Length: 496
Length: 140
Image 1 (tube, helix red, strand yellow):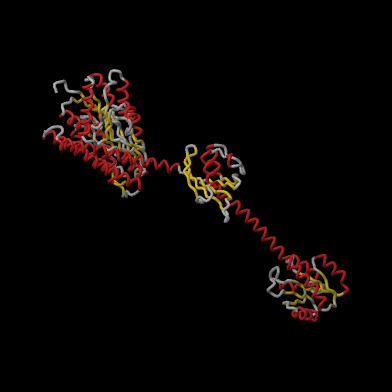
Image 2: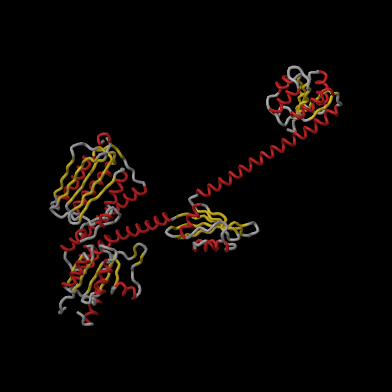
């Protein structure tokens, strides 16, 4: 503003006065615009602040000074409005001042008589504009600041991790919602500015005290802390001044309970696999050992029998490993499903046929029924085939010789249903609950002689889940089991 | 052996282990009783008292071998029968089951503890040691 020459509007119906003022003002470095009356003057205004000031005569044709002053004032409260007037109208000039003029200069005037009040009023104007701008900026900043503060607070409160800040006086000075929740899980949450000692979570309090006492130890310390039934990874960073003084500590508590559970589940699974692999291997090794050492005497016929048993165990082991790989592929998402519309009846029929030989060996009657309508589902053919074979094969395995295994395909509203039922050994309520768990095998006198991996049903469940289906089981010990796979059908319309 | 052959009871839900150990022990002149179910094995004890029981640990349940040895020890009729534990679950789910001190063995009610797979010679040696000791003690 101050870089540019202030613009002054001179409004007077006397050409001589207009030009006289222009010369005086221009020589002082002002930029001058002249107008012969109020209306002409208003036409030069495009926006408030166009002119720093105006020298206004009172008596003019069309629009006089009084009206012009009112109009400009409405429009621009900062403009310096000076009335230039003849003595005769001084009384009116005083009126004009009341209406918003900043002063008056009686005609005739010397250049200084004009310039002094103009300058001082312009300075006043500049000052008041600056003050206002500063005030507005300050208000804006304050607003932004309070917004920023509430924004940061909101962000901190929305964090799923707990945030706890302790100052050098060991007072809790900040605690977000998550931290409040975490802390009150093990005790009541102490109020803000409460001493650290009020924190009843002993492991957390001790850890924080340790961090604050640690002197020159690493600035960030992490520790796993169990609070109630949850486990937290607590990361504390000390706030240190350049001179080494510790101002406090910022602590972030992250719930890693699920992660810990996963870790435990994983190591349990690994040891389970190791165990399950060890058993058949130990049996194979045992047979070979007995045969090679001759510890059981020489009997070629018996040796051959042992080798056949070892072979069966080796095959079970191989099946287990490939099932395990399949299961891992399913779980890690590495298994690529190629889903296309397939006829479920046809897949089930194929599965039944591939199990026919096993059934015949045990003289089990294996029957297959479908409702005559083609049930189309969107499925990976290979996966579905292995689901069906697994279920039928299981049914045959756990059914006594000369028993019955029935396979059926039908429709249940929006689902196609494959049911495999047998009149075999069945399962207890406890076994039923665990049937789909990895490596679970019902242990009893009958199952001891049945080779199995304990992975078949978990594979079935995984594969069916991937097809947005579900698998259920009804069973009763000694009476048999019935497994049902539900898969969404393609033509929903027919089901409704 | 002029005396009657010592009787050994084998308990394992893995039929192949029963088979393997039966062959090895029978070749040494022992008479073998095989059970794949610990409950049935307990019933078997009442019918014929063996000189030694060799049992697996985890059968229907994780601790079914332990409870079998416990029940043998707790029964006045069978309390003197030595038990040998043979298992594939040496360490599982973070618990190391293998006994190290005499107290551990006592807690398990076991004379000896083997992990599968095991050398038949090792088992044989242990069995012979136990049976001979019992003969000396005049228990058989």
